[in-house]
Amino acid sequence: MNQNRRVEAPPADWVLCPSRRRFLRVALLAGAGSCIPFFAEWECAGADPLGLARPTGEQQKQVGQEGAAEVRKKYPELPEDDGRSRHFRSIGERLVKALPSADRKPWDYSFHVLESKTVNAFALPGGPMFMFTGLFEKLTTDDAVAAVTGHELSHVRFQHWANAYAQENREKAAVGAGIILTHAPLKAAVLAALSQHALNLKHSRRSEDQADQGGLQNLIAAGFNPNGMLQLFTTLEKVQNAAGGAPPAWLTDHPDTAARFRATQERIAAYGNKHPWPPETPLDYASLKG
Ligand SMILES: [Zn+2]
Image 1 (cartoon, rainbow, N blue to C red):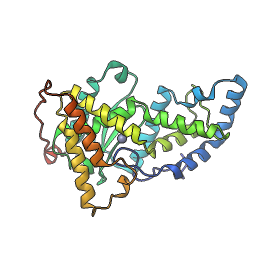
Image 2: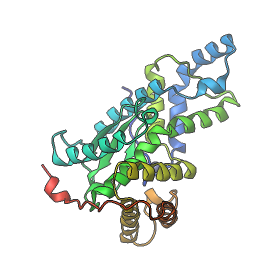
Image 3: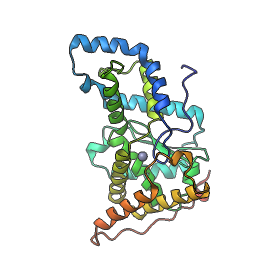
Image 4: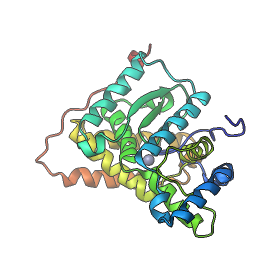
């Protein structure tokens, strides 16, 4: 493993949106040596580079596993049998069961808790999902945990990383700098570059909104109370206010939390009165420890 490649702290997504531009340059340079044969393959075969630019499902899973290994080098993961790990996993698995099979079967969803004060959660391509204790301990209902998790599951099943990567790669291919992927398993250097890209991805606002919407649907289908998502946004607002009013660095590029709250309120209201929501389930984080 190249020691120069490391997780840009802290990793990608959702409430957290570090600039990925700097990383992207690194990633392309790191992959440059390996992209030459891919270009040659494409040119000889005369294949459509646009079709080849998007990583396949199997490649996404490879990238996610590689990225997860990088994450574990940086953050300690709670043991699988820790009460917090078990609780997060049970909520995640309940959401996965409620997904349509087309969204469930292709992916290797897994649920992990990282020991860190960072108020965040994120998913990697193909299914690995990480919750920081810094966010977990602030959530007071299972429904709010399910809201975070449903949002992240949506990024995986809607293949947001692969779509974003393909879009960027198409733009670079136009000036002869893109990496052309075949459907073969990824070679080590390309895999390392792609996993770094995934770790530092800043999702577009459109993707974030789609993940909020998909997460809410999933939450409801799994029998959670949708107000959990509103609680989540309220918690994020409090974190922001506690930081002195100025948005913390990880929120500066992110869709406005108040706007996400309003959009979610409207979506819940659109269900009308025909759905009596189940009661919220209180979460006692302290009792889960150990
Ligand atoms: Zn997100």
